[in-house]
Image 1 (cartoon, rainbow, N blue to C red):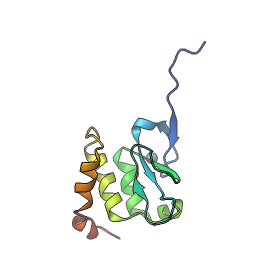
Image 2: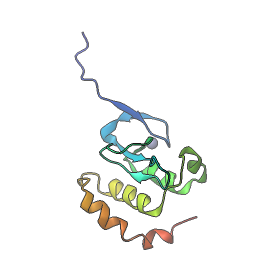
Image 3: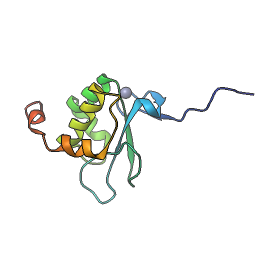
Image 4: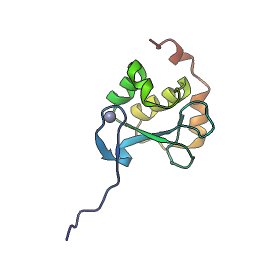
Length: 114
Ligand SMILES: [Zn+2]
């Protein structure tokens, strides 16, 4: 008998590595169009995407233009902002209040576009 617990694994859209879900950040494409949005709870409809919580993949997602083809719609600055926050502070809880707070300050991101 296998005694190791079955950890659900998901594939990062950037590096295509399978990782435990806890090591990945979840995004979702809204059902009715619009932008890719953070979806840490996995509780909205639409297609889900996963990105490694470790810094490299989020950075690449943001800077590599090829990555845009991976998604069915574009990612806006608010979502990139959220991703960056999760990377730099991985233990922070994913509370809705925090999402709202970060969404209001996209100015710093606007200067980092390629
Ligand atoms: Zn990755």
